[in-house]
Length: 427
Image (cartoon, rainbow, N blue to C red; front, top):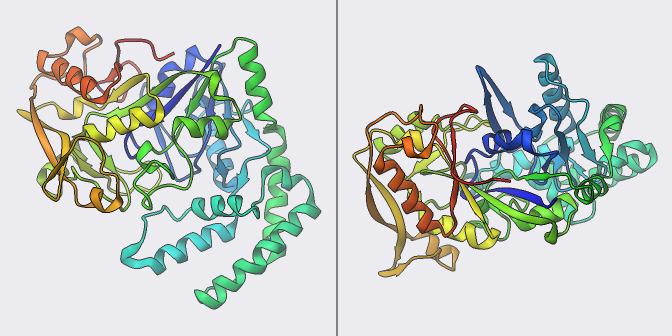
């Protein structure tokens, strides 16, 4: 069987956890392929709400093998806190697989993240301060520490000593912070080794063999396309590739394995952190969307910036990911609006653009051009079929579908498992 990739089509927080949970009983593996505990998925099952930060949402579905693949950066303390929390709630986590090649977030990564962001002041990027960026930076500079390194105390010591030789110089002499002790860091991470060992595997090999055997692999991204290191609103982006291309390198499978790319997109737009956001609402309408949608970060608790749907962003996501199907979430939030603005393009210095401006400067100065679609008053949260939606709600979905350039195969009308209308196949 081919693999299916799930990607965020905006700035993240689109509802990828719900989408993964929806198809959980139809897949064999759910794979987290990038990012770290700077992202979060909220999954509602009955009257239970689960906030996942590092674990793939498939861990909540019996019979599914959850995988943290090589493209993820792992904070072991956060990982085991999350696993213990699920265990206490009766969720079996024994079947989790973790790539031996995944890089570890170290204490000095968190320290560097916080002091550098603080130092930037008004120019800060808006990171979560969890050490994600510095970990990816060390990975790129070939000084990172991987899961497998915890199984060899000599290698681990050498790598920690090398890292702290430079990091402590920066922390103490540039930022006037206290340095870290090699022995303390070494002891902490050697302590994680035996806790990690039962879960560690060559996950690339496992996944490819599963595909060869006809099993279904679901590749679950975090963040969103506009936070991609190459294709996002650089430099206000994450440090990995949450696009479909990133799924291949992040999970260790080839692109010919993927047959479907599902893009998750909200019926409006949100963003966390700094950076341009053309449709952002800084008035009572933005606050209304925030309150109606519960737009607060799963991981950070920060207020999400809110704005109307942005069609050029969605088209950009369709193009760079090769999106075959869209999952439209949070339609119910828009209930009660008489007219709903949708951004169809931008004006930049008097010139109209129906795609994202090529330059960072152009996007920073983009003014949204809106079309207005008719809203609906009826409660749609009880709908269980697309035909049960009000005509204007159906028309809203079809209009966005045309603007995005790919069919909408599912529509969410509430947070629950049973509040998703399937128009096509997500598998």
